[in-house]
Length: 382
Image 1: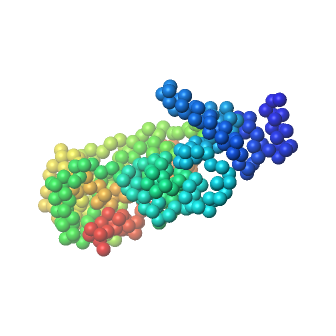
Image 2: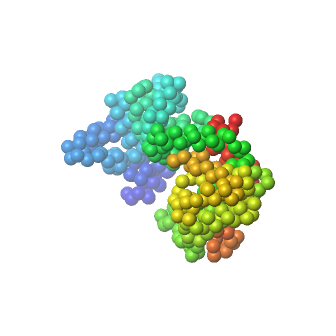
Image 3: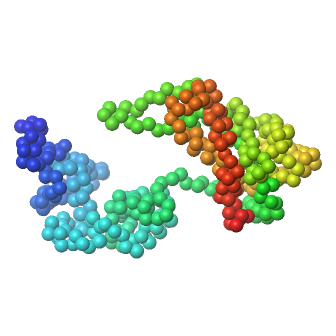
């Protein structure tokens, strides 16, 4: 009898055939005898694998016992947590108890333990939570339940995100002192007179890095044709302000990487167009092309010639520069359109620069104010 005939006969009886050739009824669990058969095979394979220094293969056990992989995993978990295979009557009697395999809720202690495990090691795997929760409280919760707890039980979804990487030297005493001095000085200026500047390197590839779905039938990954702008790199010099008398964003877009001379020219453009005026405070980070080469005397020149005070950010504090949030918003917006929409809007030449210009022009004072609030709320802004 081949597999197709077996499946046909099983279907006539209201049953199904799994991929390992076993017959089962949908919605009906295997009996106790089958559980014992699988448990014995697990013990045998684990002992054999231990002697050979290998990990036991659940797929191989499922194939020998002609059951599904998930059923083998269920029996393995019962052996791990209870040391035996539970009879169906025992499971039925305890179905209303929230502790044990298949628990549907977590009590306050379970929630407390999970949160402490999270804060102890944010990158912990679901398997680690699953095992340690049982070790500490005796509660058996599925990994899916734990994942839903972090994603749905709180005001913010606790999914995996890129971490905020903070260098150790940020907390050196001299750097902390400079941070306090920066905030003290900044607190003496009116927020609308403080303008922040920085550069953003924009790669054409950022527009064409969208994920595509793998073909589920063939497993092929689709090929996407991209224009030559894919490999181009642009540098944006930008300054942001909440001063209603000026544009919220002043920027210049350059081909390739920025340098100290181009930055100096961009400062002069901002002066000519009235974005920077006497009485302003210009906050910059301490990179080489802000303070080195032709810009060694930039701060003195701006103060003596235009009455503009240059204030340098303390080391390792990009979170105090609102224009960094403008760059983040720019990249997010650039990634919102499809390849076809990008090419239809901007063509295939300088696509990145054209798209960036349009998005920067859309930013208004209200958005920049939100960035200021995010950077300094609780520090300088109530």
